[in-house]
Length: 139
Image (cartoon, rainbow, N blue to C red; front, side):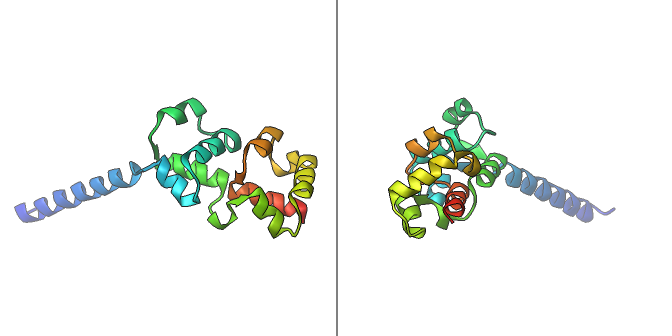
């Protein structure tokens, strides 16, 4: 091989390795994730505590940025459709009901929805996957 082709090969390999490292080490801040869902960081922390089990809450508190794989875990647990980030009031309005009825039906179907009573009572805004399940139960 000539010196020029050897240099081109090394430059290509270096660029390829750089792109691989950049792709796999891409981190996202908690604030950026919260903004994607149009919620606050405290609400995101509450979701992490109540609606997923992959990321330990102690580790969550220590971290500022999340790896691409951690972001993917959260998105799979919470859902990706931000239009379904709904409050209890919005869920009641979407189903043509009132809060009292929604609350009663949810409390009777906690296991079916995948909620705990603590999660229902302590959250006002729910991740898309949970909102969708509540709406399905209310039919």
